[in-house]
Length: 247
Ligand code: SAM
Image (tube, rainbow, N blue to C red; front, side):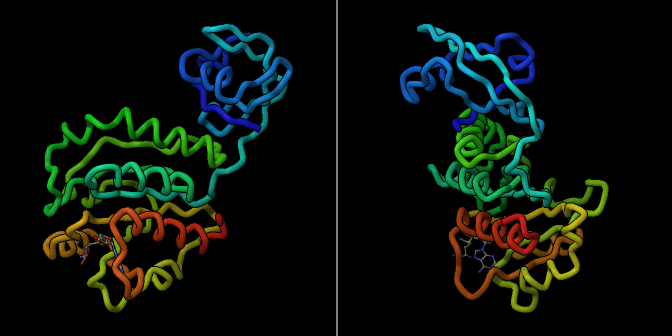
């Protein structure tokens, strides 16, 4: 059944009225017929089965039949601090991370990033948000992964988050600690919170790795092969969620 994320405010109206792109997709792409159902997700973990009761050139009206908890969310909360990347590659990292089960994305700007202007990075927010939403609908997520404001690496890596968070920085220079060994002590059953820092095309500077260590962020190897930056975040998140039995 097709799924759409809608704001709780839209969901609160009776009937629920979808407009704009969503109405267009329902009418012209999916060609939904009256009486057919879709799933409306409120982004907070609830899924609403709703039946199409009216369709016009401008909107699609639904009656909610039942509400249940949304499946598709991992118990493990993975935050991916992903260095911004050139071209479409950052959007690709967001899309694949969403499919795999990343819960929060933070764009970061590192020493070797070509783009070092946070405002320029923020200028892509609307496009990136749409990529995340489409990937979340397509992959059956129960919640929309968060896209946090862009940060400089130095800000992002400094501690500040409360609670028990395992913080890891995949680094191709790491020879001793593997991702598997770093996860060994994780209590996944209780719902672990893990932060991943992935560098740009040119990798992390040594000083950035030292700063990460200083703040208790553990360098880990993802194996002997060098992964592209957009591949590394997805692979590391998938391996973590696999260990957690969320995949
Ligand atoms: N220094 C790399 C090179 O020689 O091509 C460039 C960095 S790599 C393209 C981008 C990021 O992916 C790195 O900063 C690191 O976070 C991660 N990464 C890629 N391969 C890795 C590996 N085998 N082990 C750990 N991290 C890796």
